[in-house]
Length: 398
Ligand SMILES: CC(C)(COP(=O)(O)OP(=O)(O)OC[C@H]1O[C@@H](n2cnc3c(N)ncnc32)[C@H](O)[C@@H]1OP(=O)(O)O)[C@@H](O)C(=O)NCCC(=O)NCCS
Image 1 (cartoon, rainbow, N blue to C red):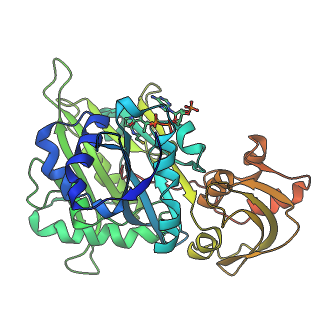
Image 2: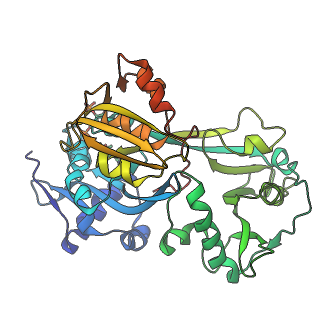
């Protein structure tokens, strides 16, 4: 089948719903909610021989924080191919086919939660962070104690806007965080708090503002218990506040012994809890990132204040030819730029460079896996010194 691609219009809504519903096993009841978040003009479509939408990718624009700066992110969500057209390269085609448009829009990075690493690695994505579902024994977490008294109160609908602001003010200090629109917040924290428990800690220095919050829901029970606790988010930059919030969230252990938590592979909880059962992981995936525009992405993120150095790169990128070639990367005073030229001391696949740029893997590690290659180990060590040591954390599945 010829792979002519085109962007969608409102006339494609039925076809897009069909391909995505089929791909993800969604029910008709979800149609309206799902279409609310869909912009057909951001859908790249391959038409099938009977006029059906045979394959499509859809972009949700976000801003993702790296080094204290919000970087325009094209979130691939979703990508799907009708069953009868699978295995012919359409999944790869509708993904890579978006890149030129993303670059034009200034979306210098793209991200996704992959169903298959191979599919997206083949078009330049690489691992950038982890997304782990754990089921902790609630009593392990309930033992966490703040060192000073913290007044945790039940939140109300009047606190919802302050929760949004609290998240937004924490974002610049947390690599990987994406800005949440009101629509995006609705799932995590419905404005009417329907079936949602909210606990908050007021900011003593700023009336109406919060220094932390915890959001959870009651989930299904494991016999013979009554319910479980499904944590949506616990967030604070104050160590005692975050401890106090976890203690409240996990305090229902007598009736709800299971605490479902989404977090990164190296969760802060391991630095807070005195005991964590070794068999808590339920599922573990990686999210992926791709630099759409190398110089744009290098300039867009913030870099650690004390880092400085220069590296000559030879970037290999067959799907975004504007990235392919030699670049001189210079980092100083929290800023960086990539300019064409240099002797290509470090050969980097676009995926390898993306994973490094995100802070997921240091250059010396990426050299072990073949994502980067260099005869000059010092160049790799220089690269390692340019980025923060901790990988980005993205708790928002899109
Ligand atoms: C995943 C999906 C988009 C792949 O579409 P496709 O057109 O068959 O993909 P391609 O032909 O371009 O395949 C590219 C690579 O993806 C990987 N891949 C494809 N289907 C896969 C599967 N079912 N399981 C694991 N890997 C798979 C393979 O590595 C394949 O390369 P290969 O054919 O050289 O082995 C399609 O199966 C689908 O719509 N699935 C349901 C929805 C979904 O999972 N979407 C992805 C969400 S991130």
